[in-house]
Image (cartoon, rainbow, N blue to C red):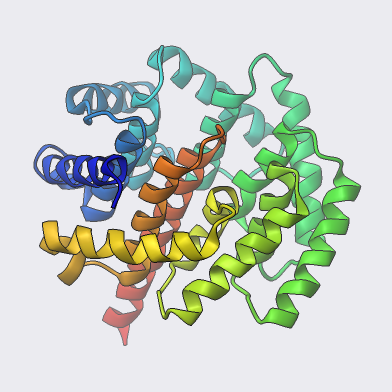
Length: 315
């Protein structure tokens, strides 16, 4: 295993161990998220800064707002990665109000989407972006009403931010849906996520590599948490077979170094940790939205787990 990859694995593990102590109330899944995103930038987690950001958001938002609970923990980790945190938070609030006024539902997913607008709008007219985002969301809702919901706000925002023509989106959604149906690769967010891979990476070949990557994981019986399909659309690379070999190697290394990864973790989530670590060390070109798509995947995964536990308790 290459030295750079080993160093990134060790930093991820060290960050996780420290977060279990300093952010123990966040829960293991968010602790793993924090360890990954700061390892991405080869940094240790600035725990005091994260805690200060949480206090500031609590002090400047309503007690009954969606800026609470797990989404606050995730949001504070993302904000701590950036400069001028207070200015970014104020821009986030502004983005949230604009999206709310455009008719989007007040919810935790809208909080994360507002962060993306605050971070990436870069002087663009946020109201225009919100209007374009609404057009895209309505298109998805009309065509795929049974699989489109608030968790698709983020993908719609990314399309709107990149000013991708709505007719182009419509055509690609149809093509990808048909292709996925033939391969029997389907999940709640599969259509939107693989369309997102094409749109944001500018290549239909990227979509086919992403699908081939998923098929290779299935052949090796490597489980994949479906909530992270949008992230895969950005992370997948050209050397698919080598990547799958590396995934198995990284998983073995993680399990050897920390028992949490072997005995107490969902295997589909563990696969995403391995894929993310590898991608952070092997993708040369800069790709936007990785941290935010990882955040959305983690949050969706947490909600899915909580829903399952609730259903089990009622059974």
